[in-house]
Amino acid sequence: MECFEVAGGTALTGRVRVTGAKNSALKLMAAALLAPGRTTIEEVPDILDVAIMSEVLRRLGCEVDYERTGDGGGGGRVVVDVPEKPSTETDYDLVRKMRASINVLGPLVARCGSARVALPGGDAIGSRGLDMHISGLERLGATIVSEHGFLVATAPRLVGASIWLDFPSVGATENLVMAAVLARGTTVVDNAAREPEIVDLCTMLVGMGARIDGAGTSTITVEGVDALSPVTYSTVPDRIVAGTWAIGAVMTQGDVFIERAIGDHLRVALDKLTDAGATVEAKPDGIRVAMDRRPRCVDVVTLPYPGFPTDLQPMAVALAAVSTGTALVTENVYDGRFMFVNELVRLGADIRIDGHHAVVRGRERLSSAPVVATDIRAGAGLVLAGLASDGITEVQDAYHVDRGYPDFVEQLRGLGAQVERTQRPA
Ligand code: EPU
Image (cartoon, rainbow, N blue to C red; front, side, top):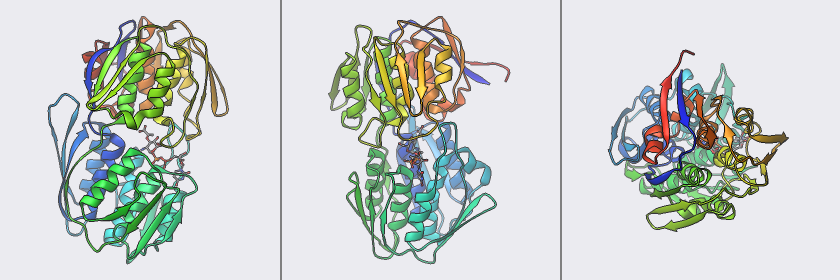
C-alpha cells in the first residue's frame, strides 16, 4: 500500500502550475470517439484516471498515446486515433474502476448506433445514479436495457428532442450533448449543468464541427450534424486542483501563486477564503492566495456550478477544523461525502455530522495519526489537514489522490511542504 507521510508545521509558499482539469480531459478523450482520425488534446493531467480512460478507448479499437510535456504542471499531450468503426463494447472491469467511463456511452450510440457499457456503480462518496443519462438518451430515440451489469443502448439514428434534467448533472449533460451533436434535428437540454468543464467540452465539439449554443447556461441547444472531424484542443485548467492549493495556502498560513488558475471559475471558493481573512488576488496568469494568521471559520454550502464545488468540500471542512470559531458545512450534491470526516476526527478535529450538515468547531492545531484516504478529494483534504497537524501524519491509500492530482507529492514539495510517498504492507 502506498501512503503519504506528511510533516506538519510548514507554510506552503511559492509557485505551482496547474495543468488541465481531470473532469474535462476525460470527457474530451471520450468526445474524440465522435470523429474518425487523430484528435490531439493538450494539457491532459498525468493521472491514473487518464490512464484508465486511455485503456477504455484502446479496448474500443483506438490508438492512444500519452506524452508528458515537462512544463512542471504534471500535464501532457494525448493523441487518440479513432478507427472508422470502433468497437462498441467496453471492458467491464475497467469501467467499474472509473465512473467517467460512462461518458463513452453518448458518443458510441451517436456514432455507431449501439453501445454496451458496464454500469460503473457507486463509490465512497455516495450513490451515483444514471437515470438522467438513460432517460435523456431514450428521449433522443435510443432503446436502453440493463443486462448482466451492462447498459445496452441501441439507436439506428438518434433524433433531436427536448430534455429537462431533474438536476443539473454534469455527466448527463455531457453524455446528452455528445449524443445530440450527431442526432437528426435540434436537441434542447434544459436545467443543464453550467460547469467550466461543460463549456470546455462544447468548445471542443464546436471545433470538431458541432453546432451548439448556450454552453455555460442552463439551456443548451444542439443542431445535429452528419459528421465531425478531429481537432487539436487544450484542456481548461483544473479549478479543483487550483482550489486545493488555495485552501492549503490559507490553512498553513502561507503565500502561494497558482499559475494558470482562472479566478472566475473559483469565485465562490475564493470569496470564502477572503471571508476567512486571506488575501486573494486573481490575475490574468493565475491567482495569489496569502494568509498571515489563523483563519476564521466560514460556512460553506455545496451546489452545482457556480455554487461552491462539492469536490472542494473535504478541503473546506479541513480548513474549518483549524480555524477560529464554528462553521456549518452543508453538502447538497452527494449523500456520502462526509464519510471521510471520521478520518479527520482521528486527527483531533471537532466535527459533528447531522444528515447533510457538518458542524465544525475549529481547533488551534490538529494532532497527527494514521488515516485513510477514501476518495480523491478526501485524500487531498487529509493531506492538507496533515500539513496543519503536529508531528507526522500517514495518509494511507494514496492511489485515490493519484487518480486526480498529477505529481501531487512533487508539487507539494515545490511549495515547501515536507511530504513523502512511502510503501507499507497492506
Ligand atoms: N445523479 C443522479 N442521476 C443521474 C446523474 C447524477 O441521481 O443520472 C446524481 C448523482 O448521484 C450525484 C449528483 O447527481 O448525487 C451529481 O452528479 P453529476 O452527474 O453532476 O456528477 P458526475 O458527472 O457523476 C462529475 C465529476 C465529479 C463531481 C461532480 C459534480 C467527473 C468525472 N466527475 O461527476 O468529480 O463531483 O461532477 O461536480 O467529471 C471528483 O473529481 O472527485 C469527482 C467526484
